Amino acid sequence: QDNIYISDGYTNSRFVKLAKDGTWVKAIGTHGNGPDQFSTPHGIAVDGTTVYVADRGNSRIQVYDGTSMTFKTSFTGVGAPWTVQATPKYIYSGDGTGKIYRLDKASGKLLGWIQTGMGQGQTGCIIHQLHAVSDNILIKGSCSEWNVEKITFKGTSATQ
Image (cartoon, rainbow, N blue to C red; front, side, top):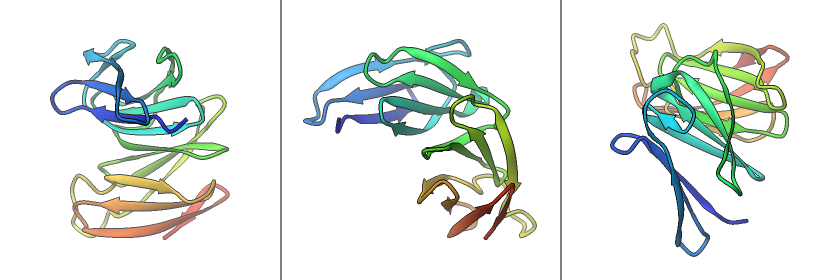
């Protein structure tokens, strides 16, 4: 529907929906740890009419209906998500320690995780952004390693 969604986490603890012409539609969130509350919402993904918000400080992904902007559920077990991506089958989340978590999109069940980037002396911000090319191929951007990597998932393992 060409709407624009923005995670606004360093000051406002919210996410915002704008219409495709830039008109303000609605903001959701205050600081806290309940539904409709965030602690550093740091990334956002939209798939159809579902919005996934990486609620980094609360170590969860909050899920919203993008049309009504109502809370649906939250997914946990994903470390402190810095980013989130949706594919037709999976939800992926990456954290600052270099872990990429794979969740079943329908249930939110954690299917596993892989470790990227560690062992080279880095700390924090190892995964700052993910881009899903397909269900099994991700592009990872790091702000501590200053690189971009292609990650290919084969079953429960991945190659870089």
